[in-house]
Structure formats: C-alpha cells, structure tokens
Length: 272
Image 1: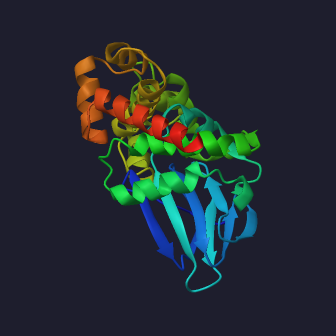
Image 2: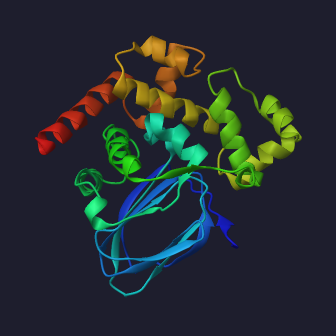
C-alpha cells in the first residue's frame, strides 16, 4: 500500500463530511468514521468494505486508511483526535489494531452517536473539558466490540511505531531526545528533524501529550490527588503539570475531573 503520512496540526477535529474521498494515509491520531447517509468505501489496513448508514470505522493510530464516497451526498461524522483525549486507552491504541475495524449498525452502542452529537454541539475548539471524557466514553463502548491483534515487529519498522512504543514504555521517566535517539540508533538531530517534519511537533510536545493522556485517564477514573497524578505521569512538578494541562485542555485538572464525572453520570442516566 502506498500511503502518505499526514502531519496534522490540530489536536482535535469533529465535523460532518459530505462526499469524502481521501487517499490512503496514516497519522498518529485516533480516527472514528460513522456513516450517516449514503454509502462509502473505506479501506483500513488493507481491508476494504462498503459502509452503509450506522456503520462505524475505527482507525487506530498509524494505521493506513482511506475513503471513497460512493454517492455524492454521502454524509459521515468524522472524529480525529490526539491520544491525550483517549486517557488510559492510549497504550492499547498504540500497541494493537482491530482485526476487523468495521462495526455494523447493530453493534454500535447508542453512546457513540450521542457522544459525537454532543461534541458537534460544543464546536470543534480543542479547549473543551468535555471532549476527553466523551472520547473515552466512546472507546469504552467500542473496544469491547473489537477483536484486537498485537502490532507485529514488521509493523514497527515504521519509525512512528518505534517512537510511540518506546515513549509509551518510558514516559514516566525523565526521558530526553538524546536517550530516545540512542535507543533507536539514530542521530538526535536527525530524530529532531523527523519529529518536526513527519510527526508535526517537537519531541517535548509529543512526550507531553503522552503524559497528558495518562493524566486525563487518572483524573477521570481515580480519586488520586492532582499532585500524585502529576508525579505518576512523569511531570517534573505540579506547577508544570498545571501549566501544560491548562495550555492543552483549556481547563484545570479539577474542572476536567468534574466534567468527566458529569459525562459518566449522563451516560448512566441514559442507560437507566
């Protein structure tokens, strides 16, 4: 498969697409594609399927995928987001892939279109404390429906896999670009160029996003203190944690925790 690497600048995007046709590509973000009307031919990791309304395509990070609208008015909800919105699911998303990435309508939980609609209502701005909890709610419903396979060593010949795997294992440590370069057998200046040209961000920014994804999960799923979470996720101090969190999420850690709890409560009420 010939595909290009898409270096996306925005960390979060939610919109409705009409007649989407896009060639094979990959990127380090999670992508969800829910057909609303018409039909679309979707390819993910070499598998191609015609999706009808209500069908969901689940694209894990760094998986080659592409779209071909089969009708001019085909409409779909498209979500693309960085892994810090996925919380504790980030490690699973980086290390595995769905054997079948397509979920038929009858296996798409009502929480999924609900969450997509709520994010559309909120708008596409990344600084919104409800986005992370809503993304994680969808993953909580999607992942049990998928049979996951471990990414093979052959997959990790792609440099982005090697980077994501090592950083995922060592993000709690005071990791540096030089250390990562030594582990990958590369010159650190060349690796810095790879980050800026291929991954669309610097190494510190990438590492910060991985740490932030784990912190978001801990805030939503545990009662650990903010100080403890900052330390467990590799931030050098509570002050730096607050600064990064506010910059990336547009809210404070405690406000994020309250929003996550509110989303969980709404979901429980809908199911009740």
